[in-house]
Image 1: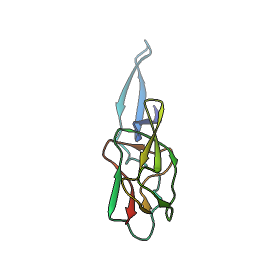
Image 2: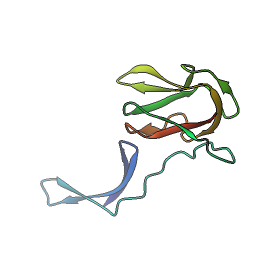
Image 3: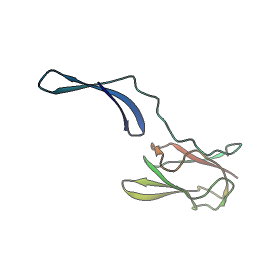
Image 4: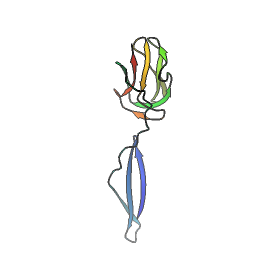
Length: 119
């Protein structure tokens, strides 16, 4: 038997594969699934009152405005890679970035909280 860790859509699974019979037929059965291993988000002491959420599923390509940055409405805060295209997620209003809830390289779903702002 051989053990492998396979990651699918950001979720890690431990899989055991065993060889059966002389014909070399191989079967695989998933072992107990390991807990997902998301990258640790970079948070500030307190989250802001204005939420910035992902409009589509993708991978965090870049944090464009780190915590403490003053931003204007329309300023990119996080850049997502969605279908091989860089897609900026912008501030919905003027404010200061209070928290970044994701890290570069992390997979996110549509509607996921990316960051927060304070007025």
